[in-house]
Image (cartoon, rainbow, N blue to C red; front, side, top):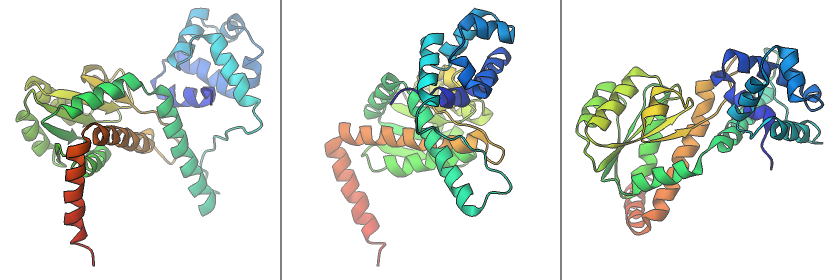
Length: 281
C-alpha cells in the first residue's frame, strides 16, 4: 500500500508553517488540479517560491513534488477512495460510531507512516537493559502511562506509573543511570512532564518521549522520541485522537520487550495470571 498523500497532509497540518498551510489547503481543495500542475504553476498560483512547495513536500514525508504528485494521483483515482468525513449535528448514532472508528483507523495509518523504526529498535533496546522503567504523563496522557504500567508489569522488569504530579517528580528524582523514564505528552509542552523528564535526565536516566510534535521540548530533548499523528475535528481534539497512536506505540514496545526477555517475561506473566485467576469466581 502506497503512502497516503491527503492523510499525510492532514496528519501534519497542525505542525505546518502559515505558508505550508496555504499549500496544504490548496492541495486538499484541488487535488485533481494538482496532479496536472507543475511545481512552478502551483508556486505561481499561491504566490510562494518553488523552494517552499518543495520543502512542503519534504515536510509531509515525500522525496519531492513529483513523488507527492504520483501518490496523490494514485489516491484520488483509486476505485476505493478513502472518505474523510467530519461528524456533524445531524448524524445518527450509527454514523457517529462509524466516523469515530474511521478516524481512529486513520490515526493508526498516519502514525505508521511517520514511524521511524530505528527509533522503535533503539527504544526497545534501552528498555531491555533497564533496571526500572517509570511511565509519566498528565491528564489524558496519565491514562496512557497507567496502561503502559499495566502491560509492562508482565515483562519481568520493574515498572511504575504515578497519577499525581508530585509523586512523578519525587520518583524521577530517585532514578539512576540504570533506569528509564518514558514521558508521554501529545503537545510535548506540558510543564509538569517536561520537569519530570529533566529531573530524570539530571539523574542519568535514559528518556523515551512519546509526542505528536517533533519540535516540542520533549520531542527535541528525549534520548529517543516516538511520534504519533492525528487529526483534529470539531467534536474531537487532536490530542484525544492521538491516544490510539500512543497506545499502539506502547503495545509495540511491550511486545518487543516480551520477545527480547522471553524467559523472564514468561515467568512474570505466569505469576500475574496466577494472581489474577484468584480474583475470578
